[in-house]
Length: 189
Image (tube, rainbow, N blue to C red; front, side, top):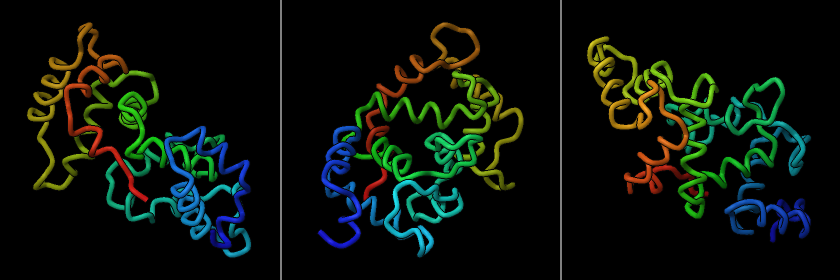
C-alpha cells in the first residue's frame, strides 16, 4: 500500500468495509481521491470537511444535473452546506457503487429527487427533476402545458394511493420495473 493508504489504519479500513458496499481497495482509492482534493496542510486527514465546490469538480459529478442535491443529501454538516467529511464521501460512493442494493440506490435516488425534503415527490419536486434532466434552455425546456402533461403522466403511473404525490414505496415500485436504473445509478472509482 502507498503512503496515502497508510493514513487509514487496518481497524478503520475494516470498519469502513463493514459499513459500506466498497472493497478495501475502493476505500483506499476513495481516501486517495478525497485527500487529493484537500489543501496541502490537510492531506490524508479524514475528519476535515471538503467544501461542496471541491466535490463538484469530480468528473463523475461535474456534469450530473443533480450534483448539488447529491452533495446535500450525503452531507452531515449542520447547517447543511453540502460539504463532505471522508465518511460522508464514502457513504456517497457506497450508495453509487455497483455492489449497492436496489433498495439503497432507490432510497438515495428518492432523497435526491425530493428537493423540498418532505418525504414525498410532489408536483414541484417532479417539475424540478424534469427541468434538471431536460435543461432549461429554450431548445430543451418544456412549455407549461408539456410539463403539466408529463407530471400528470408520472403521477398516473406512480401514485398508487392517488394522493397527488409519490412516496418512497411507490417510487421503489416504479424503479423495480426499470432494469436500467441500477446500472445508471453508479460512480466507479
